[in-house]
Image (cartoon, rainbow, N blue to C red; front, side, top):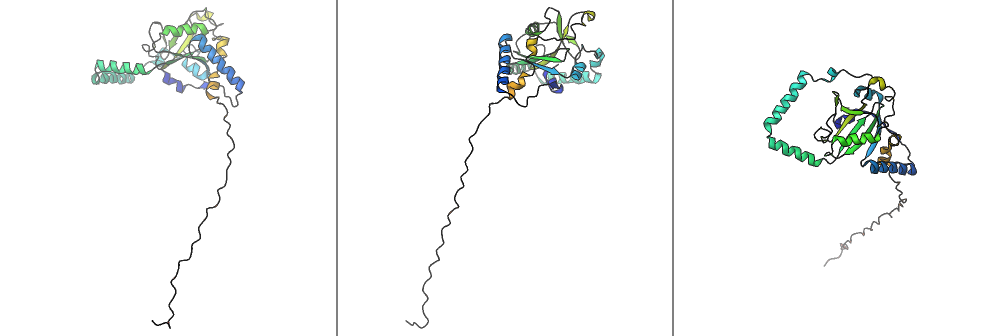
Length: 251
């Protein structure tokens, strides 16, 4: 699932109306410590139960495989689009455009969704392999001793080749993958109730909001408004008039 799908899935996030400076500093310290420990930025969100139940293949309301199958109309539309692209562009030109797009993207954001409605978000370099994502998951899950796998949906497709980079598997500029323990369902009852993430990672939940919205208060000196004096209008002098000549005066 590509990163564009993020906008359609609601996330439960903490709302901080008033933030204490000490609380903001503590949040920033936790985020910085996590970045130094795991070598990448990490965030934790909580997704709504309704969206998780409809999106996750491991939920109790899992949709059948044919639910996600393309219709004949979808298939021919995609096929025609590919034929048109191949006709209009040469292979060399397509490869050049692809390389140019790759060079502009410096990071990819991957979200790993767990069955308990929590999502781990981490940033990677697009040239890194899927194995780097698996290594991170091993470090943050509460039960790293149990086998697990990650998959994409729809349709449900386990990721098996860990040597491919994120560009190759289509995880750039971002993607959502899902987590599941790879154990028999009869033995999974105890672990499926969670928690799936370590307590240290869960403490990061919602801290990105503090980090982004805290701004130092700006104090401005009161502005003194001085009224300007009224403009001085110069007096108009009466125009000089020539003296009138008396009628009796004859020259």
